[in-house]
Length: 493
Image (cartoon, rainbow, N blue to C red; front, side):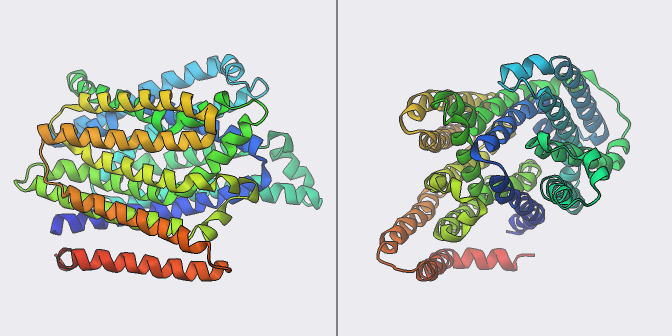
């Protein structure tokens, strides 16, 4: 219980920064969806889908390898230096290639007038990939507060620059205030490009903040160690690439499988409503920050499997509660996007559940990371990617972005189940499957119950009150079932 409480504490620190930061970032959604029409916002959704894919390529699994070999080699300096040097070399090569072919790439993506998008994004991806290793060092050394502070400053900078470029500068020009200065740094024709510029400046700012962590170790490259790390990491690259197909290719496929006249708008609506599931995504990300080094450090203890099972239980409880909270408060949550995007709200519950399955899959991944059988993770993710491509090809032409949402749901559910079955053969962990399924199923039942009685309620306020009471009832049931364990967790030292 003590180790789980420490994990919860680390998750909370990462989570507070992630939640506050993402909420600040999240406030950009109503800003963007009110300034840009769905067709324009679709460009943002598509470009960030490519960012996620390329980021995984540049990292090629070395972040997880860093945690693994920091424990195995007992030489943090050598492991960190080798990891950072290899990522730096790949990032430099990537920037050179992308800048050299920015024009042809822009033509390929159907943005021939905006090759600068390619340049900006190449720099953002490279800077973020390189900074991930100093961030990993902070996580490995349990410096969660410094990690969280820098992340918050990065997001604060990004949000501030978005407000500056998209709100303040147009307002100053409209009111003829500081016109000469504003005109020098702001050009209305750039439009959505300012979202990308803000991201680039924030990424540069982050590198500056991380300089003490970057230069604290001399950059030396140990080729023998790198070969061992790469052998471990390469399947994780395949795993990551397949995972990106699952997570982001739906936006790309919506664009090319939808009727041309509505394709960009469909991407914009889907991307905006996808972000409503952000709370569970934030929690999963915060959990991953804390859990990855935690899982490796716990492996040496005799009761590690029992600890992993307990962690999974509390993870599912937290996700189920968040699913129910977001869906029951949808009348309030929906105001984070413009009215033009409301038609896509029906996909939110589907995507929330899909992300819960993805989070459980991340939890389950402990078995192949600890047994050095990372190839299994690659196989499972490749299967998920193929399923994603096939189902999207079938469903998007039939039911539009709703098909993409159901594809995400089916894919993550399948990956979760397959990983559990294989994992129990190679590294048995005593998960209480009945309890885990019951927690999720009960939250879904409560959600459908709220939909049923909502049709008889004349006022939204009354609906929200009853939904709030329903959420309290769910929390009370969880407390009753887990009272003893929760009490031990709270009072453990």
